[in-house]
Image (cartoon, rainbow, N blue to C red):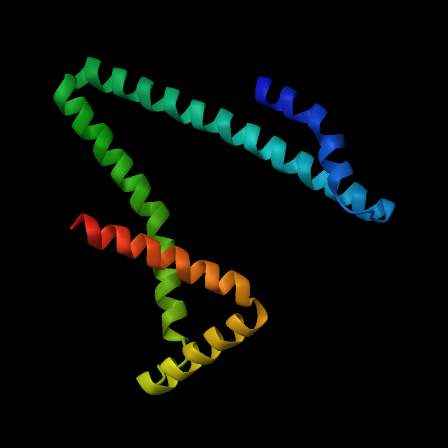
Length: 146
């Protein structure tokens, strides 16, 4: 809660840094920032609650089964929970891949990437030169250390 108490006084300063907006947009931004801050605080409290629940579960299992079997049972429970959370994500990814567009031939893909890169260099030439110089310096340093 102290983090939230520290962030709330900064809200007017953050809003004053935004470009001049209409009052409705400024109010919507203020509400959004407050929702994000409250959501973050709720997430921290939830993480602490989950930690305490896991500790209590381990202590109960340790008392009933012993240290090693209690840890094994808790690990199995956590594995099942994680599987239940990850499985829908994997299934939705498989569904999306089923509806994906057919793969392009390699030459067309390379031409599209080259065209995109050329447009980026045309739009931001100095940033492109700086990025290439940075990548070259990093690669040179990595190769030198080999």
